[in-house]
Length: 200
Image 1 (cartoon, rainbow, N blue to C red):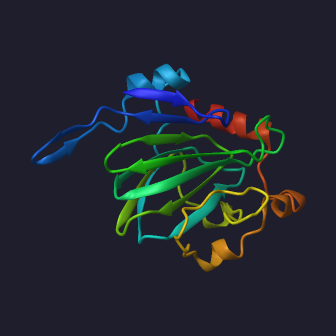
Image 2 (image 1 turned 90 degrees about the horizontal axis):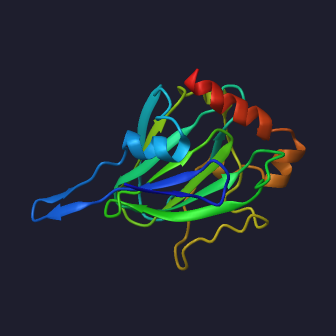
């Protein structure tokens, strides 16, 4: 498995070898040795597994979890294809407000490690696309917030000719600046401390 340190501090992508034949394909989307080589430790203790199904053009996010509890995530796309975005929402981070983008699909079997304090969004490029999440904490509805994926200051590049479909919550989400002004964003040092505590 190959891993790559992404532009946002603490985030990594993992791309396994994909074995294809006339039956389909096989790939390991998580390998402890590769994860430990990248982060210096194995995956966090898992508290929650979930997935969603999206039609073509569905835009989800930018979602994040407040502190506490904060949540780290390991994400892959076992079916379909998405353009995936990570956004650094950690106030005080050296990469605050920056984003990185990659494609996750059933063909490349790539996975992303999303540290505590980062926002996550994706737009589905195919019908019946599935995104799978492994998470360090359970779901707490009141702790789940969003920043607008259409914030013009962020300027996330959406695919041309694809009209995004959003939930009401995501359409009403504040911009990054508004969320910061309202004190809704996680702090950088607190995010690092929360993430470090996952392995204690």
